[in-house]
Amino acid sequence: PLEFFGEGMLIVRHHHERIDGSGYPDGLRGGAIPLGSRIVAVADVYDALTSDRAYRRRLSHATALERLHCEAGQTLDGELVALFAERESHAAYFLRKQGLDRLSLLRAISHGAGDASSPRMATSLSLFSS
Picture 1: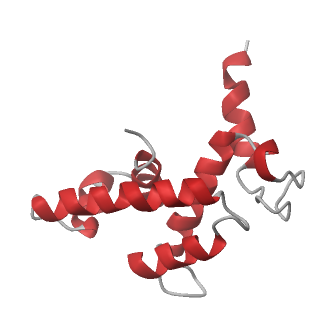
Picture 2 (picture 1 turned 45 degrees about the horizontal axis):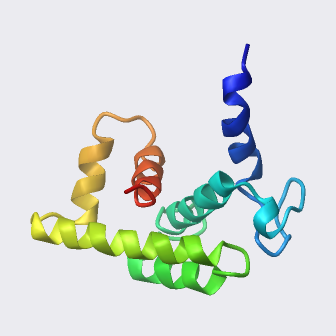
Picture 3 (picture 1 turned 120 degrees about the horizontal axis):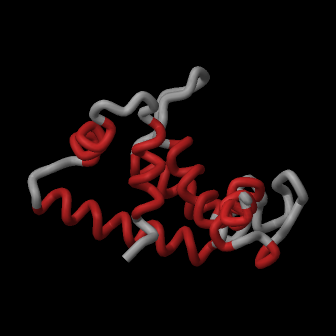
């Protein structure tokens, strides 16, 4: 009865796997990691870097992108990091053209949402779609 969750379960299970095999839970590497998991990994890392944590303040967008590029091809899929950065650049251009900034957009998206990280993750993931 839950077969339709199969692909989604694999994506969630493996989104902490790393291209170099250093991730978990199964130590998968490279192409053995499902594409969806590799996409979520990039968005998850970006979200973590740009969110306040108990042990550090959020990083700026530019610093987070630098960190993603440093991990590209090592722990994160290099092609997906490049695609994320490219799409994000287009999104930033659109926001500036509309007179908006990222924070305003995120506030608008998260208005009424209980978990502020979910809209950020959704926004990050949306950068991969056309």
